[in-house]
Image (cartoon, rainbow, N blue to C red; front, side, top):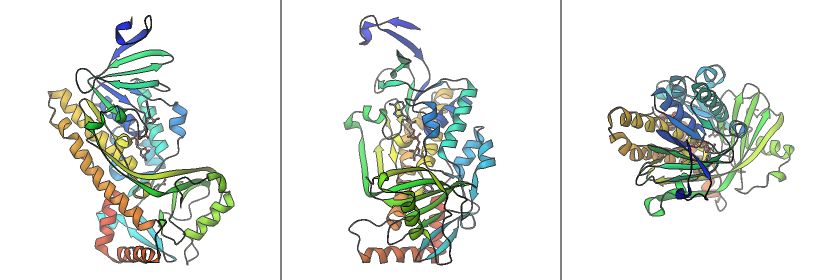
Length: 410
Ligand code: APR
Ligand code: PHB
């Protein structure tokens, strides 16, 4: 449908394409795509609008630790096939300090829970395939997205697609557009409270063509700073180094990266990461951020649009999945019976999980990183905390419970 609509604030003579859906989803990251799939399986219409290209969204390198609940959700929504074949299931994790690695047997401590290594970009690829197979709309390279009238009246999303101005009328808008999106800033400032902490360091991350030299992740505290050994496949190692938040990646030759990784990760038993060609490098800052509530009228925020965690706890992707599962179940109730109780409870319940993840991510980060201004006392204290942790079944159980994550609830 289209009409010539000066009344809409558009320039006289401009044609606006009008359309309608039940749920308008802004953003095709893991949150928006999974929400679209959950709604599709419940017979609820949605339109997903993404401002980047399909290639960009798929190629973007992100984290890669999936909690059991995320793996189960992927399977339940019919996108678990490749994950089951290619995902690397880990029952434990290592903490390294003082020249030794200490294994935490998460599965044994939690009654069988573990994590699965599978790149976030692979999650996104699988969900895009499912969306495209469903035939429901997913538009990339959409421009000038803005959200309107979600506090009163009928929510709408305006955007341009292939140069054509469009207006999508929705029952509900899902803001799944990440930390730098437009939905959270569209909420009046007096309706949101922001809680935030920036950390005085970042992570320099690389992907290397090197067989992982450990079957499980290694989180290392070293006097020179934190380092993390991870992987993507039997052929690809993923490694991170604590650095300055604004670190100049140009100052890091491959040789410098490897020698710093070796210095921070190598243990006295001779273990160190295998080296190989570095084919991706990047620096990311670290912050903790929560916007409360995660709802304004008929606009619901999910994933990074509402909260950011530092990557040390590996919670970002999993929190996004937990949010959209909760939101999809709430929307199902709303459409089946008109019952809004779950929609009304969405923000409070999602925030409860978010704050548990914030607590855990902050704790892992502060235990394992060295901040400017830290003195030898702080380093000894961190070492003592790690010594206690790996010597106490109770403490290890606590870490394992949080790291593997609780079941998703509605
Ligand atoms: N219009 C449309 N889409 C937008 C806009 C906009 N104005 N702004 C941002 N987007 C898109 C981004 O390009 C991105 O594809 O929204 C998507 C948001 O995806 P993510 O940032 O991946 O956020 P989310 O889906 O919540 O997933 C959270 O991503 O950042 C990681 O570590 C984080 O693993 C976590 C996960
Ligand atoms: C990753 O493999 O990218 C990864 C692993 C663990 C983290 C963060 C990132 O805590």
